[in-house]
Length: 283
Image (cartoon, rainbow, N blue to C red; front, top):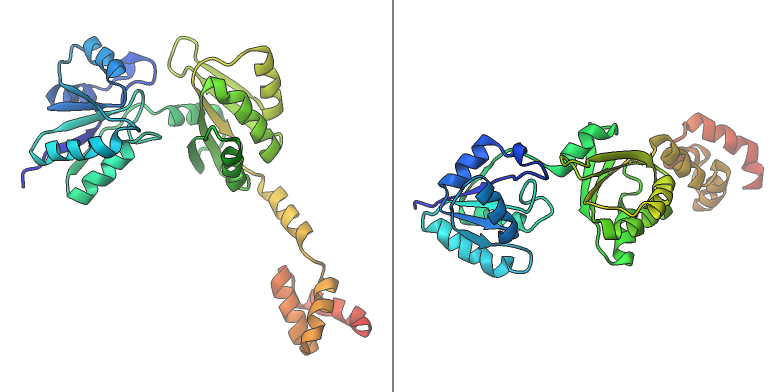
């Protein structure tokens, strides 16, 4: 089998000078470019004087078009996959084509290059050692809040993409679910009006009430506070006295009873046993 290759080609997120030499070489050499929006990609190819056939591959045609592209790859054609901006297969249907290639034994060649969320993260000032990229939130309010509830106790730095017309809804839901955390709002990355706004969720809401948001945003949010989570967990636990009274009905011997309560509450056996001795006459 002499299959072609699928090249994952990142494109600039704003500044055309960020196009890599290797990506240009690949785009010039492939048989076909599969693009999220052929109009945008055509402008890019024209800028770099690249003449290669274009075809569309986006969310609403991926099921049908994936099979078409696979047949071309199996026939020996090389295909470059690009998104509107940044790395393909990140928050776009390219991931489905990658899975299909893996299933069919087609080689995938990823090229490094521009990516909005890493660009925003490294300049945010937030911890970069561990982070969670959450992509775009849904437009459905209930589903959006469910997503935020799922990650509210994550102690890693959280990263989201957001469009300007949805920003205020998202910030309001984040404030309600997360509390008033630190946030960095990065917009117009690599462009003339690039901006990093370092603030809190409540202050960001007030700011954008006065200044309507413009441009695509990357939201970098401080993760949950470990110490606060631990204190919250401990506060929700029953007291040793309460558990000793509850478990005394099981007929356990005093030391067995103390050991069980100590394990459940994360306390020392001696501490719980001392408590037992103080209240044993009430059990």
